[in-house]
Image (cartoon, rainbow, N blue to C red; front, side, top):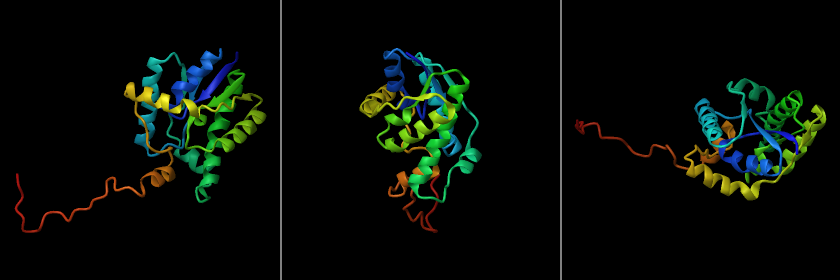
Length: 197
């Protein structure tokens, strides 16, 4: 059993990994550090959802609540292809987690990103191992994808906010660009149509 610092990307993804680690005898502490989440209101929604979850699960959490846009823009090659941007973003968050784990005397760190079916697990694992070597703390590379749907269903039952894109402005655009969400299609009232009060 180890003290494990669990990087939490969002509330829904945290439920099952946190409990699975605890069932395996580890002492788990959550860590919310996600400067990739944009816009600011979305950042607040996800932060609030995790705080609501924390009231229901025995999961202590440390939060980096500062809106991280400047840090994210400095760390991510935002003009690069998507795979490189994502790798930069993983590295920023996992390096912060590994550094915090080492400073706090944790024996290992992990990330709920490995519960997502939308993330590149091989890249996350490689970057996690790289950060582990740099900071001298073990990386627990658990594949929690089989638990993802159960965690999301529990989050729905708890009425937690569930986001519908990864977090950054690029992922938001990719998620919604082919939809008609919030697209105005009407012509509006004719100029001579009287207003109805």
